[in-house]
Length: 93
Image 1 (tube, rainbow, N blue to C red):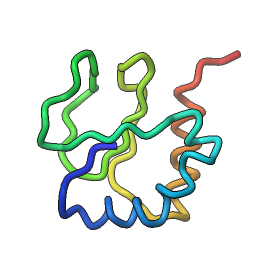
Image 2 (cartoon, rainbow, N blue to C red; image 1 turned 60 degrees about the vertical axis):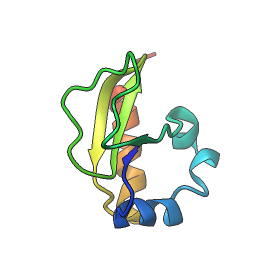
Image 3 (cartoon, rainbow, N blue to C red; image 1 turned 30 degrees about the vertical axis):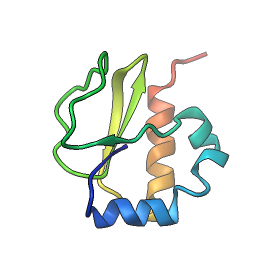
Image 4 (tube, rainbow, N blue to C red; image 1 turned 90 degrees about the vertical axis):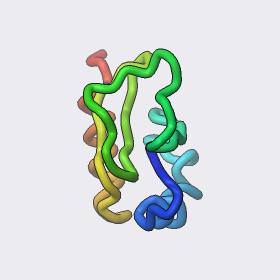
């Protein structure tokens, strides 16, 4: 999750989603790693393109971007969008 100070949608996500996120199947499949928008990327993290606004949720596989959700559409839309992103990014059995 790319965030920055003063991001009202980041604050909404932190209030509406963050408390239960680690307890969900999605949270277990894609744990949150918080990164600041204006700070350098951690070594080895490869993005398909730069992140330009917050929040942006980047799904990675072995530190390589596998998909992203840009913005926070609200609690009702976030969960199905994230589940769809995870389903597409997971390798077939």
